[in-house]
Length: 318
Ligand code: GLU
Image: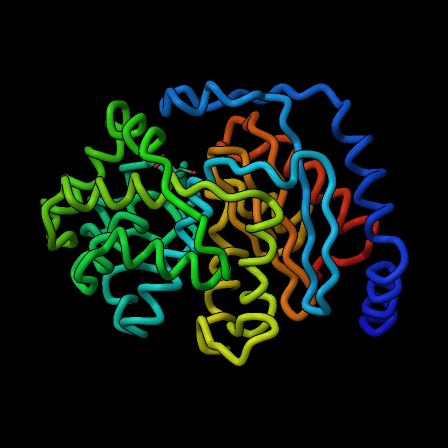
């Protein structure tokens, strides 16, 4: 049975994937979108809510996109996967002494579990976890912002990827929950650096701008056992790659991670800029962007699109 599904997908990849993307795009573009853009990062409300783009990249070097797939947007929490990857690559298993690997079942910016958990965030993808990862990176990099960006550019083979100082500044002026989270974790002993420096780094990593096309190409390393495609260059070891994918599967959508597994069936990560990246190990990475978010903070149309895509192509991992 598994073999039949894989063969199906191989055929679709060669013959029909672009057509399927286009058909689903047309269907989903016109559905009523009850979502809302996040107002707590004022700059994000200036983005056209009707933007919609999709791009797929496969490990066989097939690439196809539709809609606004070449326009850059704020990748927000999708960058947490890249921050985790760099920290994991540099420091190995000891990062798990300061951060858990369990789904939180709470919203992305929740403070409630931290006290009971003594400042150890449940996973690296909730904001608390990404703040601890930021702290780890600041401790081990000389010029954290420059070196993190260099890592992303190198993994993407794209020297033009950059932070948006406008978005970082916008979040800094209104990101009061993140300020609270960072100070609370510092008080509980799991932030070692100055909280202002940690927050500045965190707001910058969230402000990185990329297109769906750039994202799906970059994230192919997670579909390719940690190796950059077309190069013998390791971003993560195969075991680290397996674990990052497992975390995306179980924690990538906050308290909607179960729903994403249930409906889409791929490891993935969302961001409040309306982007979602999803990875099918050994096959493909697909990025979707639509700025209006459902109440859990995930792109409404992005979720709909990916559910329809994996259903139509029989290409979820389940
Ligand atoms: N910068 C956002 C925040 O900290 C990221 C959240 C997200 O994209 O889910 O609230």
